[in-house]
Image (cartoon, rainbow, N blue to C red; front, side, top):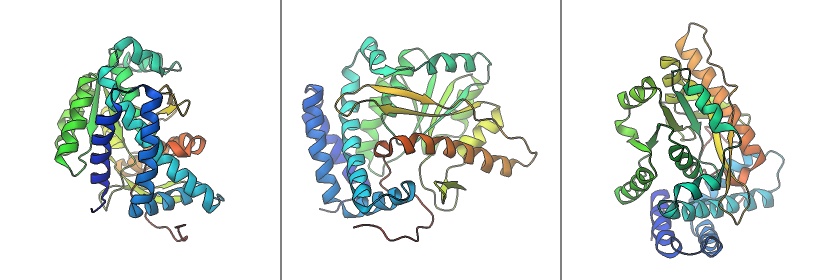
Length: 301
């Protein structure tokens, strides 16, 4: 069997959905933990990419620490999948109880009162879908952009699950005007930024190394005047589904008169905020592809 990122994610979804969706949380997490270990040792290419990424974000860490963190990341990702397949069966009140708003949803309400909408910028970290579901359950007008995974079966499953949570889902390749309408309608637009680009993104510094990420979040905000809010939904305890909402409301929109310079600067501010989230909980960041433009250091095997 040929292991690819899309194949691992699709079959991980199918296995977790069938075996875990109706089980008690701890039992489901037990299966997800085994699945994470199997994926880590059965997917050499992904393992190497994760180790290279963590070597950059954890300077000074030993090879053993990098391996443990990379393995823990895959375990946490499988636990995220276990939570994801359970979400459609979770009631609104239970969902609200699982997400500690940490005072952040009230601040979002205040931003929407300004009338310009807001761009919520996330990374593949913690449990972003649970946080988005809780926001939708509170009546916040949330539009999310769905990445195509390279497998139509996985795309259909993931989009359907998010729509059932109350999100408006726009496929990445069809985004464009739909996203501008969401912001001009004073809505919340949620975008993921840690998606490595190959020549059509913007280059910024991330943990002291160069990455190339989408410029879309910055362009959307600068075009509409919407507030940019880096956000993460961090798992609080390893064997429980509760998450805590983390937001940075201090990111200001630059205005130098040079739009491309402003796009780079705003993107830099966004990823700098996410460095703080990842530095505190590196094993909750899920990046299974090469993230950095250049990595000179040797990777642990």
